[in-house]
Image 1: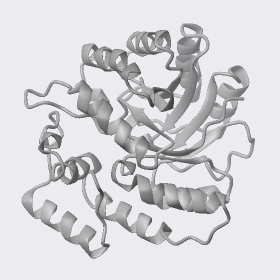
Image 2: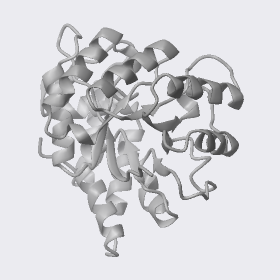
Image 3: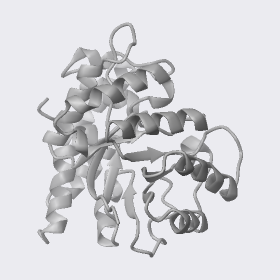
Image 4: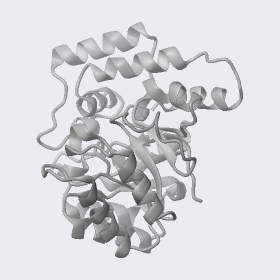
Length: 290
């Protein structure tokens, strides 16, 4: 069984002033995260504005990723509404030896568990040996995985369905079979999740909390008393007061102005929101070295 675990950032995408994807800086940011505590990163996920990035630019980035010495630690977000595009992106990625994928079912449409099983069946039939982490986030897709659906998918595809990112939080406490890597979507859930047998987090705010999150994870694994969990949770709470993508890009722009570039309909924080963000983080004595 291919079980992965640890601290994973839902990595930001970096854009030029003309809003084209900056391949080099997107890759360097992913490398920065891994060099500063993350076990790996998810590229082209929702935090990376994947739904707003063109298919052609996604393909360019996937082809560029092998330039990183950390490329074996990359998970590719390939869940788009088009089944054909999802299959195409997976097969392109697998041709470059990327085998791990975070996939959310399509957004907008109403559907049931049996439709989701059919959707993933079609993906796996056309990609064979891919390794899929199911992305459970009802807020974004409009669909919430059930325990029965996950169990059926795992039974049908034991080698391909290898994990779940549970950002809806209806699964992680109740899934008892030890045959999936279970990730939570927030640092606030990290320590709690580890205590009940979860395997880590895939989080947007790990773009800035990677060192803190790794400390919490390592201390738990080494049976050391927690010294940073409260601060980690409080930092997450500060960013959650605002749109996460907007607040992360606003924060990162103090280290590199290129992070001010975001794709419509995303925007940066307003001046008053930005002021509040930095004040609250300063009160927590929080900053990063970028």
